[in-house]
Image 1 (cartoon, rainbow over the protein chains, first blue to last red):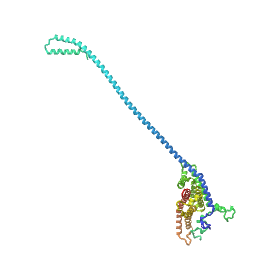
Image 2: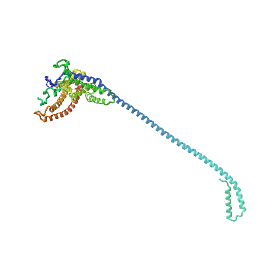
Image 3: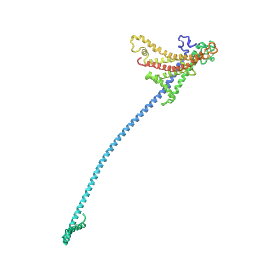
Image 4: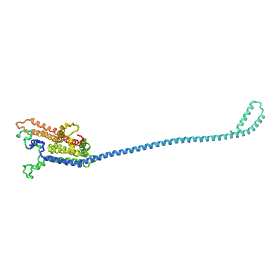
Length: 178
Length: 285
C-alpha cells in the first residue's frame, strides 16, 4: 500500500500506522519530562545566579560609592576645618607679632629715652663741671693776661691783637674738653 | 517500461523502492524468520519497529542528549558549550514563551522547548545523511504533537476558568451583538477547537511532506533521466541527460529551501502553541 493511494478517503492524512502517533507522543512526553525536571530548572537556576551576581555586584558598587562619598564629605569637612584653624592661627600670629613689635618698639624707645636722658644728665654734669673748672681757671688766666698786658706796651693794634690771640690759644690748650 | 525506458513517476516502476514509496515505513526486521510468521501477514514488528519509528527515537535521544549536554555543570559565566545552549534556550524562552505568554511563561517553557527542539531536529533529518527523511512527513507524528498541544491549551483554560466558563469564553466573544452570536458562536467553536489542531498538524505535515516530495521529484527524476536513458536506445535524446543534470542541480536549491522550511515550521508550531495557551489564559477573548 502506498500512502498516496490508500483505501481511506482521507488518503495520506491518516497515519500509515497508529504506532507513529503513539511513539511520537511517548517520545515527546519523555522530552517534555526531562525538560521540565532537569534542563529548564538548570538554565533558570543559572540565570538566577547570574542575576544575583550582577545585582549583588551593583549593590556592592553602590555601597562602595556611598562610602567613598561619605569619606569625601568627611575629608572636605576636615579640610575646611583645618583651613579655618590655619587662618585663625595666622591671624593670631599676625596679631601677636604686631603686639610683640609694638612691645619691642616701646621697649627700644624707652631704652633710647633712658640712654638719651643719661647722656643729657652726663652732658649737663660735664658742662657744669667744665664751667666750674673754667671759671676757676679763667680767674687765674685773666689775672695772668692782665699781668702780661700790663707788662707790655700796648701801642700798636698789631701787638694787642697778637696778645689776645695768644691768650685765646693758651685758653684753648689749657681748657679741658667739654 | 522496458530497460531502456524511463519513468518520471517511480510509483509505476514498482520495487526497487524509490520516490514516493520512500514515505512508506519499512520494518527494521524484514526477515521475520525469528517470529515464525512465514513473512505473509503483518506482525507487530512491522508496525512498531520501523525505520521511521527508529529515527523518531534517535531524534528524541539527540534532543535529550543535547540539552543535558549543554546544561551540564552550568555556570554563571558560560563557556562555549553553555553559550550555544543558552542561545537556543533563550530563543524559545524569550523569543516565544515570554513574549507571547507573558508572566506565566515559566510553566509552559519546558513544553515549548521540547516541542521546538523535537520538531526542529526531526525536520533537519530531511536534509542530513543517515536518514534523509523528515520524520514529520509521516502524519502520525504530526497528529500526535497537534493533539498534545490541543490537550495542553484546552486543559490550561479549563483548569483556569472551569469547563463552562472556558467554553463560553472561547465561543462567545465580548462586544458582539446578541443576535450575531448565533452565527459567531459556532464559528468560534469550530475555529478554536477543531480548526486549530487540524491546521497545526496539517501545516507541519504538509510542509515537510510536500518539501520531501519535491526533493524526490528532482533527485529521483534527475537520476532517472541521467541513468535510465541509454544512448543506444532508439528513443534517446541528449536533452534528457541535460534535463537530468539540471534537475539534480535544482535539487540543491530545493534542499536549501527545505532547510529553511524545516526550521520555520518548528518555530511556527511552537509559536502557535504558545499563542493558543496565551488565548486560553487571557481574561477576555
